[in-house]
Structures are given as structure tokens and as C-alpha cells.
Length: 312
Ligand code: SF4
Image (tube, rainbow, N blue to C red):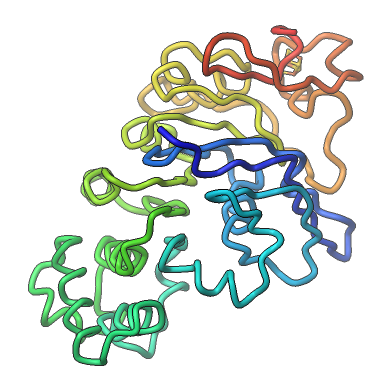
């Protein structure tokens, strides 16, 4: 597999009235072409900001540093016109929360057709036909009729399917999917997981999710994020069967299928994250050293990296 993406020392910080939010802090991560990588972590750990950084959909006030090398080009050095050409056609993002992401006053078929026309230069009629084709591809029954519905006329699961159809409509090479199963009931969630798995089988995907079972089912590798940093990166199998970082172990134990034992305490502030290891106030294995020394990410075995002093 060839290298698709290399994120080097990426920082995305944005000012707020309470201080500078360090949502992404010195992240290094690579992806191969055709790989599906799950980015997991609790709400507010910075994973959506990391995804948005890759497609450069952040507030203009965001201070972004580092490199995002995509197919040999640093995306942070492209001008807005060059980025606009890449979005949708080469890199697409499936945004989270379809209820707020879809335009409530436009029919869903027209919303997909608009994205296709913008990036593929199809006629109005061709774009409409492509929209119906995509709704069929994501298994929306009576796609031709549903294309004329407004978002509020569709169920939560159908709206998520529309978001996926929109993301895939221009046949992008790389997809960033942000929480595609969030808020769905278990039956709809398993349908969306099956759909994502088949629809992205020949694509590269970064899937952002707080649901480790979803990442484990769809993705080849998993990167665990906490308080703006990556803590562990390994194959999905290694993460689920042999997690090395105490946070990953806690995250797994908090899954309903593993006993629903939540990690004690709360996610830290991204304005003033804890000194030393950012996880130390919640870690049962913390020592005095963890309060002062900030662990580096180290390779513990082939393909398995972890940021924890226990492994240094
Ligand atoms: Fe826990 Fe220390 Fe490892 Fe941090 S460095 S995860 S506090 S053992």
C-alpha cells in the first residue's frame, strides 16, 4: 500500500473568551491508500477538529501549524481555490448530525445534485439522475420519490443515509466520516455500519467516532485521541484485544458489551490540560512521575505506538 496522508506535528488552536483552546496538539499520524482508520475518543477530545483540519473547514481564527501531506502536497500550503477543487471530488467529509447539516428548505435530491454539479460539472438533469442513483446506492427505498422529500420528512437513519450519499456522490478517494452512527437506535446503527463498510470497501477513510465497536467493525487501524493528543495507534485487532494504554483499556471497559464501567472523572479542559501525562488525574496506574513528565509516543511493537510512561 502506498502512503496517502502524512500528518506531521499538527496543531489546531483557536482563541475563545476563556483562553486558547488547544484542540489538536502535536499530532503525527500516517495513512495508506485504501486504508480505513478509526479516530476514537470521548466527546470534546479534538477528533472533529482534527478531521476538519484535514479538509480545512475551520474557523478563520484557528491557528493551524504543522504539515498535512496528502498525495505529496501539503494541504496547509494550498490556496482556497485549490482546496475548493479537492473538496468533494478528491476528499469528502460526511458531517455529523444530519438534522443540522442538511438544508431544511431544500429537497434532499436537490442537495445531492447541487454537490455533484459543483464538483463534476454535470447538467441539472444528469446531476438529478446521479442523486437518485446515490440514494439507491445507500439503500433508500423508493429513491426517486424520496429525492423529492425535505429532510424533516425522513427518519434519522434515512437522513444519515442521505449524508453518506452526498459524501460519496462525487466518488472521492478519501472520506472523512464524522460520527456517522451518533444518535441512531441499535437496529439503524447496524444498518449504517454495514452500509459504511460496503460503500467504503475500495476507498480510504478516516472515521471519527466515540463508538469503539463501530470503529472495530469497519476500520483496519484505530488511533485513540485524548485531550488533543494521540495516545495509542495500532491495528483494530490489537486495540480491541491487547490495548496498552490505560485510557484505551478504560475506554474499552466502558463499552456496553464489556461491562459498561465508565472511566472515573471527566475529560480535561483543552485550554489548560494537566501537566505531565494529560490522563494522570483519571489514571489508576499513575505514579508521581506521571504528574511531571509528558510521555512521548513510542513504538512498542510493529505497528503499535503508545504514549505512556509505563512503556517508556
Ligand atoms: Fe497513566 Fe502514567 Fe501512563 Fe499516563 S503515563 S497513562 S498517568 S501510567
